[in-house]
Length: 617
Ligand code: ADP
Ligand code: MG
Image (cartoon, rainbow, N blue to C red; front, side):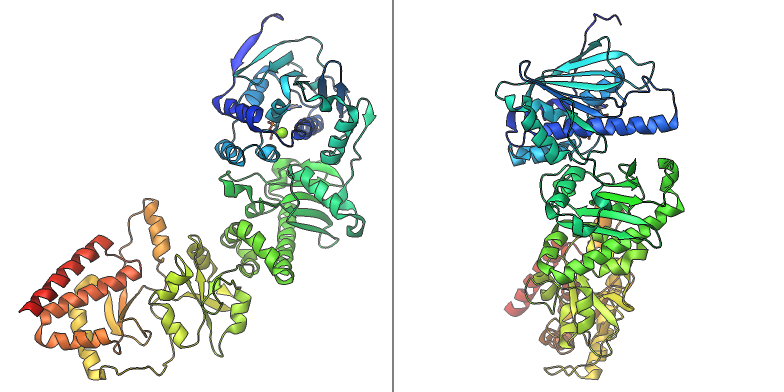
């Protein structure tokens, strides 16, 4: 392509949409575009540094790794230049013309909903470059790739539907981004205003940042300082820097250790869980350093995946400086770091839960899902994580939440198992047929109400040596309790049970007389190791064939309905059979088994008309 030829291309549709929002509906926090462009420059320098370590063949190898900002009031421009990795023509088109990653839709949604207030999320969604169009009438990117075969290029756009690319002689390696400011945005051409912004957002950038030739940032390794030397403000500023955030961190954990590994870590829990807005899983957000030198911005495997919401820095002197990203992931050292850090963090959360329960609940509401993910994914941390769970319970008043530790403290003498139920709500669970048997014996039932809970609890099995048992299962040994109301005689009960077994046939596995029930006539219990209703519904939703599963029925020989059924059996055996089937269906429905509600209603109607006919005779 000759020097004079200008290539025009269209932005990808998603980019056009983002630009439209950026240009027309973001009014606050416009200054973050400076942060985003500096952050990109810093990323590019970091890639350059790694490339130089790996192979010597780069364009203009001697250029300094630094960021230079210049302002020009007359031309109404601010320019951010770096000698980083730069871009080739295809990279320009790819990186500044399209968005490849997932989460764009979520971002667009979040932006629309926040109606103008959402500029702060732009960097977190990985579309920071486009934030420059909040203030620019035109953006030009001059670049030469570190690849010696690259061209000298100029990219330009006014943020409308398209951009241009052409050759432009004399670019040095890296990128020079010239932001032509709109009328009214002159503040970004004044040095003191820009200095303020850089100090506020970019003070921790790991390369020198110069403004009109003067050094601005301090390149400080906050995480290596001792706790007592860091102020809240510094922590907050550092969090905002590493997390591309505007808010304050929810939790800050700063610690150092000498054994078994030398570690300095500064970890933040963000104010908000971005995945709640439908954003796809985020990349690891805790960077890995060795003696202040960045090894990897998004190290996989340094922390378990379920800790991907954390932001911050981990610095370990024990890492070899020349470690490659690939070998890092499966090095024994990183596994060890992972173990130590995860344990520390979980312990930290446990302490927060104890010391400041209300703050902890705010955290738990937003990030509890990650802890549950951890219970399933990291068996080695399972018990500690289980201690972090919060749930309602038959012994916690109203909406109040409790923990497994508190449950264990409340356990009765001789109680060996922790009972729980998973369902839609506390009210629904307490109304159901399963809770009352436990309540009558003074046994607590933990009540969980999230879809995932069943899966989480099944993968847990034990807490502090106590087995976790779903209270809707057959085979739970319950002691006898004195029961109210007259019961059918043992002989009558036996005969009724026998009759029911014949009448109900293979609708159920079998029928027994139970001691569980107080106010319900019949309950359906599923085998101890079977998946429960929620899990079965989930499997069905995922297209797996419904499980053929038969429940055991327990009847309550003290219940009026059961006694009446026994009497009815005398003169009206057929009608009694219909009633028995209806009772069984009701119990199965309550346990989320078999029978569809439509069928049950049809049967019920049939039964009613027969009853009315019987009375009319
Ligand atoms: P993100 O930084 O989260 O990837 P951005 O929208 O900020 O998203 O930037 C898009 C991409 O453009 C970057 O990933 C990078 O590949 C490229 N890019 C932006 N600025 C530079 C730069 N100064 N040097 C080299 N590449 C850059
Ligand atoms: Mg960026």
